[in-house]
Amino acid sequence: MNATGAIQDHIPEKFDPAEVRNLFPALAREVYGKPLVYLDNAASSQKPQAVIDRLVRYYSSEHSNVHRGVHLLSREATDAYEAARKRVVAFINAPSEPEVLYTRGTTEGINLAASSFGPLHVGKGDVVLVSHMEHHSNIVPWQMLCETQGARVRAIPVSDTGEIIYEEFERLLSERVRLLAIAHVSNTLGTINPLKRMIRHAHDMGVPVVVDGAQAAPHMKIDVQELDCDFYAFSSHKMFGPTGIGILYAKAEHLETMPPWQGGGDMIETVAFEKTTYNDPPHKFEAGTPNIADVLGFASAIDFLEGVGQNRIAAYEQDLLAYATERLSEIEGVRLIGTATDKASVLSFLIGDIHPYDAGTILDRLGIAVRTGHHCTQPLMRRFDIPGTVRASFALYNTFDEVDALAAGVRRVKEMLG
Amino acid sequence: MVANGTIRERAHDIVEEFGLFDDWMGKYEYLIEIGQALPSLDNRYKTEAHRIHGCQAQVWVRPEMKNGLVFYEGDSDALITKGLVALLIRVLSGQPPQEIVQADLEFLDEIGMKDHLSSTRRNGLASMVKQLKLFALAHTGSA
Image (cartoon, rainbow over all chains, first blue to last red; front, side, top):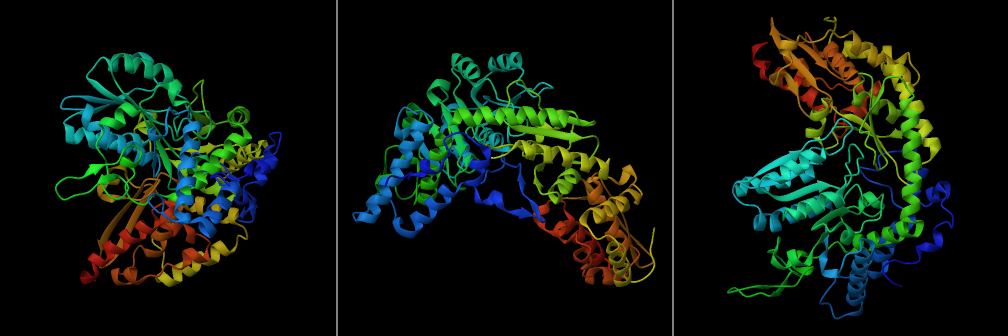
C-alpha cells in the first residue's frame, strides 16, 4: 500500500455534508450536553477517520526511522515518507520534489525563509513589505530579520472592507522594498488577496514574494507555478491533517543559494571537524529525524481533500459563507468585520457593544465553538479600532443548520448581554 | 460596597445566591447583573499599573490599604469578566491581608465558574487572583 491508503472508498460519491460529517468522529461529540457546533476551523480543523487510522497504522506496524536504514522497515518508511512528498508536489503543482520542504507548520516555514533567505536579500536601509492584515507569524519573523539587518518592515494599508489598497501597494513598492511577505487569505477577515497580480507587480520590481498560505490551502486549489510565488508556506492541521507538520515550497533557484537553517543529521553530506558539506535540497533544510507519522497523516488528508474535490468544497463553503453572512446581517446590531468581494469562509463580527469575550463565553455554553479576540492580528484590530472580533470559520463538514444555530446563539447573546 | 463577614461567610452567601438558579443561563445572567452593578473604576486609575495581564478582555484592579485592611476596586470592558471581578472584590475587599493570602476561593467552583480559573480561558481570572493576593502578601506585615 502506498503512503496514502485507500480512503477514497470512504468518500461519498456526491458531496453531501451530512455524509462527509460522518467521516469526522470528533463532530459526533457533545459539549455541555449539546451537540458540538464546531466553527473554529480557521484555527484548526477536525480530522477524518482516515487520517487518524493512518497514524495508528504507521505506529502499529510501519514505524522506523527514515533514510539510510538498510533494513526493510526503514526502507518502507522512507518510501512512504518520500511518496508523501510527491503527493504534496502534485497537490500544489510544484515543479519538483526538492522544492517542497517539510516544516512544523506555516510559522516555521516563514521563519525558515526569513532566517535563511532573508539576509541574502535584505540589507541595511532596505524594506520588507507586509500588509496590515498579516498574522503575527508573518510580521514578527520579518521584524526579527530587519532588526539584525538594519532594515525596516512597512505595511500596505487595508481598506474599510478589509482589502489591500492597491495603489498604496504600488506606491510602497517603489521604495527600497527587497521582499514582500503577504497572506493569501486573511485569517481574521477572510479576504482573498489578489496574489497573482501582486506577485507580478513585485517581480517587475525585482522583489521576491513569500506567501502565508495557512488560510488558503484548506479552501482552494493552490498552484504555486501559476502564482509564480517564490515561497509558499502552509500547515497540515488547518486542512484536516495532523498538527506539527507543514510545507514550505521554495523555488529551486533560491534553495540553491540559501544556507542551511538548522544543523544536524540528514542535512549533511559529509561531516569532518575541518569542513562539513551539506546534503542537497530538500534534505539540506530538514535536519534531524523528521515528523514521519504526521507526514503520512498529511498525505491522507490530501487524499481526503482531493477525493471530495477542492472545487466542490470551495463551492459549498461559499454557499455556507453567503448564508451565514445573510443570517447574521439580519440581526440588528451585528457588524461584520471584513466585507471584501473575494472571501474565504471566515466570518468576523461584533454584536453591538458586546465584548467578544462575553459573546464567545455564551456561545461556548450553547455548544458553539468560535474564536474570540485579536486572532494574532493586533495591528489589524488597531486599524479597525476594535478590541477583537467573534470569528466563525466554516469547513466542508459544517451545515446550514449549524449556521442557524450560530444565528440563534448570537440572538441569545444579545438577549443576555445587550 | 463592602460586605460584612469573613471571606468564608461572604463566599457562602454567594454560593447560596447562585444556588437559586438551576441552569447555566440563569447563573450567567446573574453574573452579568453583578458585573453591571459594580461601579466603574475611575478612568484615571485605568492605567498600566492597575492592568491585569493575560486577559482577552481588559481588566484593572486598584488595591488600597486602609486601617490594616485591603480594599479593592476593579473594572473590565467585558461584562462576564467584570462579574467575576465583582465577586472577587465582594469576597476579598475589606479583609485583613493575611486572610486574603490564605483564601481558597473554592466558591468559584461551587457556583460553576471554575473553568474561568483555567489559564486557557484567557480571561485572566487566575492572574487576577494572583495579583489580588500578591498585593495582600506585600502588606501582611502591616496588619
